[in-house]
Image 1 (cartoon, rainbow, N blue to C red):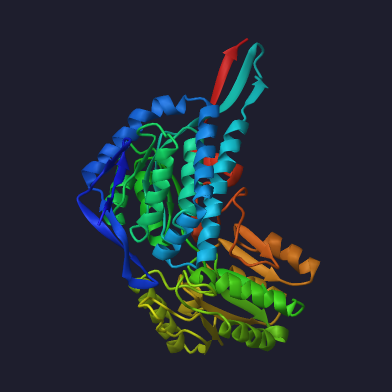
Image 2 (spheres, rainbow, N blue to C red; image 1 turned 120 degrees about the vertical axis):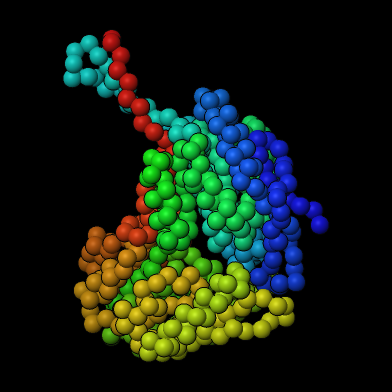
Amino acid sequence: MTIHCNYIGGEWREGQGTIANINPSDTNDRIGEYAEASPAQLDEAVAAARQAFPAWSRSGIQSRSELLDRIGQMILDRRAQLGELLAREEGKTLPEATGEVVRAGQIFRFFSGEILQLRGELQPSVRPGLEVSVTREALGVIGLITPWNFPIAIPAWKIAPALAYGNCVVFKPAELVPGSAHALAQIIAEAGVPDGVFNLVMGPGRVIGDALVNHPQVDAISFTGSQNTGRRIAAVAAARLAKVQLEMGGKNPLVVLDDADLDTAVECAVNGAFFSTGQRCTASSRLIVTSGIHDRFVEAVCERMKALVTDHALKAGTHIGPVVDERQLKQDLDYIDIGRGEGATLVCGGERVERETPGFYLTPALFTGTEPQMRINREEIFGPVATVIRADDYEQALALANDTEFGLSAGIVTRSLKHASHFKANAQAGMVMVNVPTAGVDYHVPFGGRKGSSYGAREQGSYAREFYTTVKTAYTLA
């Protein structure tokens, strides 16, 4: 089988071993073998990026814009091929996978225009005869570490702004999903990126990821993944004064008030909690429901869940694909056992099921009768598991929504403008949704949270410049 190589300094390079890419919908389907970079190759990738940085950072914004536009269009032109690859290796349904690919293409095209709008300031000094200019410049070499749940969209929203603002990139994708990352790297290379400006190094986080974070020639790290890993990265980066951007998950609340439209509430809950197999940091994992609508809501959600089809990601009619791998499936099942042990009631789903092909299939699970301090309400499960917490009224529901160490996304379903407005102002989250699912964001606006969910500048949209550039103030005697 062909080995899919790392991309270092403009060359495709084999590594010290290979990583097998297995389809979670069919474990007999071996998607490919992907080269595992060595620590020495990581050093070579950083050196190549460092060497390429002076010329790339001073290149014209028009040439950078044209490159990003080509990359974006190539992604969109190959959406069917890339969508199938993504669905095979990650397990999300083909429509979701194709939609993610489209989003990646749109992100590159957005930043192809955004770089043409990079603004500075020209101000008078308080001292007569001086003028002051404030400009933004590239940081240098950026290490990008991405998760497995969005294997092309999240790399896109890190790589595109990094390149747009004149930085050079060393990209380390999640070990579970090298296929989408490699395909994206191929497109970037084919589009004509100069040697060393973009580098792909695949391999385990404990080897390549740690080496990238600790590397003295890497000026900044952007990471999306677990809270524990994020905290370690922050500590290492702070010790060597590297800039850091962290996205670390969520335990997102969806509040449903008595006056909510029931159909809207059910759709928000089911879509937000279970689509993408619940493997989204913005998933609605805590459903906080006031007493007057609680029983009707639970019954309606269960009926909707029974209609969901859990099956092969590429099969037409599938709503929920498999969990990404055996380890994640075990974690999900362990939390279901924990919930039962804590006294919660599993009212629907939560069963491992068999399909025509061997895979990691789990029906979506819904718990009721849960208490705020239960582990299933405190810890991020990252699977198709949601809990229902009963609240007496809006005030208690808001307090429960904010009772978490996370703060990524929060939602409310209500017909009350008063409560919707109050919730938007008082929910302790970086993103707030009213009558729409907590999962699902646009590519041209900022993404990120607060508390234990995020650290550093926001991702996406024009706000990305805050992380990928540094500000320079210059004085000139007029």
